[in-house]
Length: 179
Image (cartoon, rainbow, N blue to C red; front, side, top):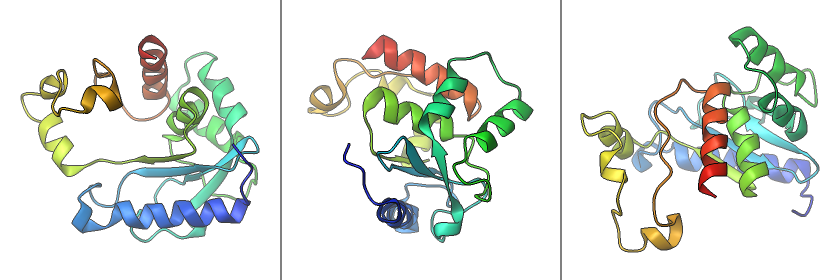
């Protein structure tokens, strides 16, 4: 990736946050979700904990080191306190707010899949199905004609795991199995 201006990427993730956070889109529930943008210098902006996508400004983002976050994923399992410490230690600037627990997932998507911008949403329509008695069953097959072109022959499905470090490890393992 070409290194983008730090402020340019920040402006883009703020714009993306506001767009996906719009209530009419129904991409998020109560403004929840996460957004990140790769700067291209080994760091990225990620939404900090406790900020709402619809109203977030530059103060709601943290700049973190991809390498530091990935090192934690390759190490031992972390407790909640260790996860909090890991997130704080990954900050490029110590005065930035604590990054979201989903920072691990964002770093993983950038590293494993080459993503430059990530929007992790809680789409109302998808949650209506996943939280029903059917669970992931409707997604196990093809649900639209071009799905196989975009997603491959079979979807990667990860069972529910609390957000954060352990979910990122489960998704990493599924990425590596799937890709």
